Amino acid sequence: MRELFQADLKSLGDQLSEIASLVRAAIDQARTSLETADVELAEQVITNDARIDYLQNALDEKAIELLALQGPVASDLRTVVAALRMSSSLERMGDLARHIAQLVRLRYPELVLPESRRERFAQMAEAAVQVATEVEQLLLTHDLDHASQVVKINTQINEVHAENFKAVAAEDWDASAPTTVDVTLASRYLERFADHGVSVARKVTYLVTGEWEPHVQSA
Amino acid sequence: MRELFQADLKSLGDQLSEIASLVRAAIDQARTSLETADVELAEQVITNDARIDYLQNALDEKAIELLALQGPVASDLRTVVAALRMSSSLERMGDLARHIAQLVRLRYPELVLPESRRERFAQMAEAAVQVATEVEQLLLTHDLDHASQVVKINTQINEVHAENFKAVAAEDWDASAPTTVDVTLASRYLERFADHGVSVARKVTYLVTGEWEPHVQSA
Image (cartoon, rainbow over all chains, first blue to last red):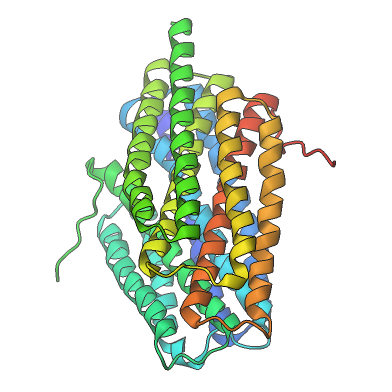
């Protein structure tokens, strides 16, 4: 019985990793579509999000079944509850990648972002892809260095997010109102994406150490 | 044992209702501060959000304790898992009310919204308060009429949200870029607030009927 349960827990972990891998692919493709106005790629991100939603539901059903059949306690119980929450964060990350792809589709064949913000958005989107990559690795390995990386990259993303808002408020901002909306939304989507990554990192950290805060090297 | 558990379930429901009541107060005050640039009220919303976060954590700990000690199955189990998820939706609703209050604080003593959008935003914010009120009533009574109302009001909010974006893209839009950002964010916050309300409505509907979709009268 106990061995069976460990196998179930592992399969829950595998399902989480699978979703994380799809989320990584989604944000990577959303990033490329944002930078190249590749509407077919954007469509793919939008279509594929249904798969993430489906897998989240499947994971949640599995977790509830585990709770019902096995009645886990202590750390096993916390692992199952954390899996439920992490699947919800990953699902939201998928939604946010889809939202970016939807901006691309809306503005096609134009690029969503004005020239003046493209370089910093490229860094921000690259950082979001890194967050997803670190989250995926964290779920696969439970190596908390990946959790620290997520927190560190999130700080960088927050900096660009604040800078985007400053740029829009500056006197030399001359983009159209719809472009201002797009910059606001794209920046917010990427910032939220990273926030959810931090939320997953905190949950894995808690499961491994009993402490909520990932350790961030000061280097 | 069984009776004790029912009392625990009830206390979980009471905790949810308490959070919903604070969320309703938060969005109501956020709405007033948005319309009057009342920065003290905005500060209050921002400060009070910590209480919502605290109560969410307390509810989650209680739910996990229930799972550990009672090992509920079937509908009791689904009730506890749904409570965990609804507390998370309510906590996000509190965050979104706080985000609106933060916009008010940022722009004080100016009003956040340009004159041309104030009337529609007033309706949108009033609808968001209604969503919170219906959610609170739904959690108190489990009367699914409140769930239908939430879905119906959400549709109205989505309409104003789309209209706000159209207004910003129209030729006669002459607000500054920071105001365009504020309109974008405030609209998005209210729309997300209502989405989370729908998410709670769907969960209660599922617990009561086994079906996900609240019935919406066509009248």
